[in-house]
Image (cartoon, rainbow, N blue to C red; front, side, top):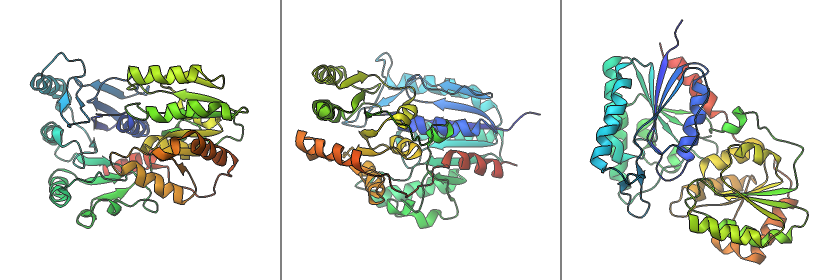
Length: 378
């Protein structure tokens, strides 16, 4: 007997967090459904090996951080040509019938992709008028100067085109209304799932056997080189611990060279590229020092790893999430002024000596997402 199918759309732009979270959800979905995964950003070597999982790579688009303009990462095509090529790639998959469509982030973000996303939804509804459409959304919304007008637009799109909003959060930690004022207008559509923590799915559970190692990581690597540099420079202050520094797939060559030079000055530090088993590395280290993206924090929580996090301050998302976790004692926070040799050494030493707290956060979001969709599909 054939299984119902789910179409999942994900467009990642600056980092890898949205893609990692979406693949974690797809792993849970693939246990129940056939899944077609439309990926709109570059291939970074991440996929799933699961029966019934089909990974479709659209001609990639990325976004420049300084002006939010879209561009072809290969530099070979115009934006107009890429939109056309993406439509051609998507079209055959809209001839199939799906029980559910899941769209990552939109309409809370990815507004530049609105025509494409609404086209995917419309095509899926033509093939199956009963298809359920879900927005897959994180816990914290980015704030904009025209927030009220933007929220009106988001609510209107959700009412017109979506059945439910899956909020991947523990509302006891950060409810949607903390950063989205129009939440009351979506009450009938909102479903909390808990946070998405892929590490728990892969079996990287809390370990009582940890190596004397400090793991420094930069996520995708677009930002955060100053954190890696500062850590390399204090690594000799911890003679009982090795320090492993992970750059990201998007770390600039100049930043990687500077980090490598700093690591070369320390016999306690080593430098590696992006890890395919970050959660395994977390589960076996003594302390994590990292940026404060959604997925990194969930991996830290899933493995119950003592941690210092360095929030990206261009928007409030990472700081708000990190502060909520710090209030429960689950992480310590580093600011730019804490990257001096004296202050960073003190912060690392203090965290190494701390006992892990007893507070817990709901991390069952991937499994709960699959359960919700299974409950809804006729």
